[in-house]
Image (cartoon, rainbow, N blue to C red; front, side, top):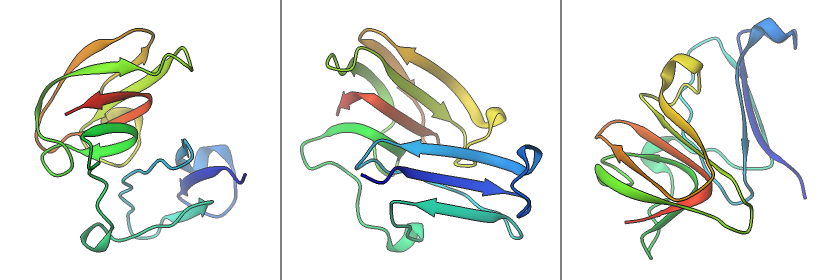
Length: 135
């Protein structure tokens, strides 16, 4: 199976200092990406849509997992119990202020090793990998 990856760079040299971000998605996962004029973007193993014409990512059963969700649009703001996917043993949770995927965008992140709680606010983004939230 082809990996699902995205990469943004300031130029086409392939040099480490030109990388703006890299992201690897769990198969079937999804993410938001904000790009600026002049940036190079590589997408592998998936499709990309403008936000206003993208298919809905709101789960019908209310179980949010393996992806990035915009708070207030895809998932309501509030406090949630984050449930670890016990078959993996460890997950990852990230709350960001935007979808640029840069270190200064992160509000909080956690290597999830057991169930925990998180509070998210409108306008933030929450990324879940190998853990889930039931809304």
